[in-house]
Amino acid sequence: MEIVYWSIIIVLMILAFVGLIYPILPSVVFLIGSFILYGVFFSFEPFGWLFWTVQVLFVILLFGADYMANLIGVKKFGGTKAGIWGSTIGLLVGPFVIPVIGILIGPFIGAIIGEWVVHRSNLKTAVKVGVGSVVGFISSVVTKGIIQIVMAVYFFFVI
Image 1 (cartoon, rainbow, N blue to C red):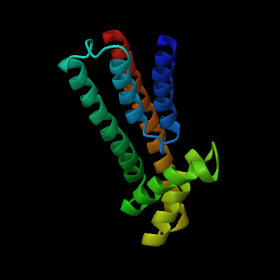
Image 2: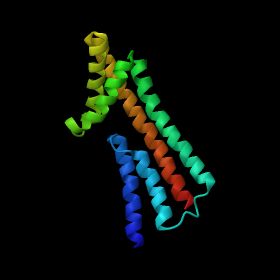
Image 3: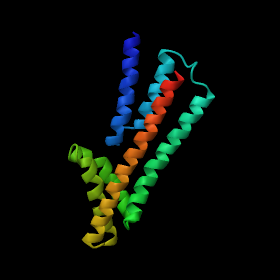
Image 4: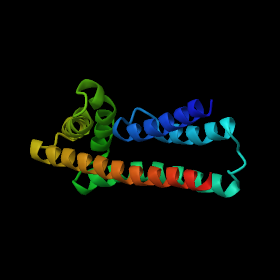
């Protein structure tokens, strides 16, 4: 049974990292879920208040990194709230409309449409904002990936 338990825990951790590429998957929920299932299947004894405090701080850092990377990426390239909203919608819709590459094309097109429709920006400015949204997304994925790796390593260190 131990093999089944560990398989479930590892699958949840893998899904957490897949959630970096497909943001519709709540990656942090899968990661925390793997910690909780370890406690249910084996024991919560290794998880003291320090472990949970550190993990909660990392979760807060994950949400902050996700929001800030997109915001900075769009703003640095001259975007507005319309570009941020368009980028976010494109990020959620893109992978389903155009599998695999849609994760990059979605935010790009979404930011362009958002800027162009709301502010009647010229196409050159809107494309620049679209590039900023992709830069923000990629930096967000890298940052969140590093944080999630640290969370998982800390989990394995504690157990």
